[in-house]
Image 1 (cartoon, rainbow, N blue to C red):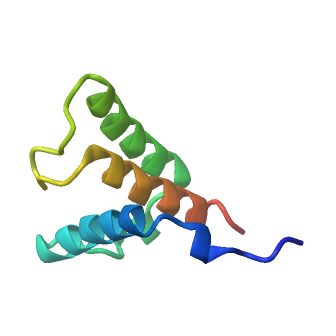
Image 2: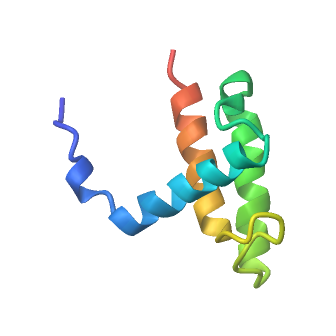
Length: 84
């Protein structure tokens, strides 16, 4: 098994994902609510943000944060939920 290399994760990208989580927590959306969802729910949300970005909208109008940061957060949630 390969050793994890968290030092290779781009710091700016990870900070952007952290901002999405801070925004969610600050607006009563509950940063931990994702744990009650499914991987498919998270993938669907990631796709909505990705499609908005592909359509030319760089930032989520509700949070003001980059759509791609929302995609990153949702994919991380899906990955965490997809484990037994």
